Length: 244
Image (cartoon, one colour):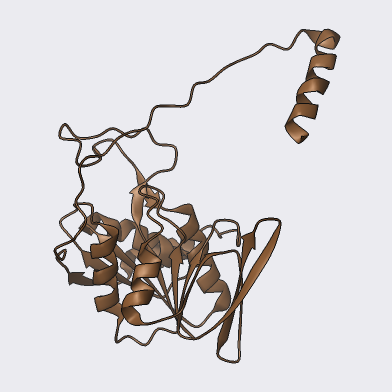
């Protein structure tokens, strides 16, 4: 089994986001970076399935950090599609990934269901279309056998199950597994690993970015329910409201 996992370098979850003056980019001066939680689960799922594993990302040279983190978890090799650091549209990103992996013979291509920063939900589907491969999104259960991948995803109060032939594209959701922590020997090996680097340029896109907007923070409210035993009736009422 030859497995590819595509990840994206994104600001750390929970970080305070500020924009550049022209509202075209995120100001990264004081940000830490990681990979999306869904993609961490994709890395873990590839390791659990086993076989030959490769991690790929599109981004600046600094994105090597995220590739090495995946290799510290156990991924065998890495590919960086190096850009100038500008944020690409889903259309351009998918085209570059498809061109890079088209002739590499991957049996299974994993993506996160959506990136933690843009939440486009598009790249996996666009890559599958470009490569002519079946695609299942929002997956929270995978089984492989007899040249097929059986993928399950939540639907309402139940589950949908899909069987598609390999090779296939799968986008996974957080919760499909619990990602492992990189080991110390894994971190040491990843620092010495050679990362294949391919310079890429964005294709002309039919999508145009107007500007970025930071959504307003959700208002916070604190309610004192009472003191001591006097608060018990109000606590009981609140718990009843939460379980309805």
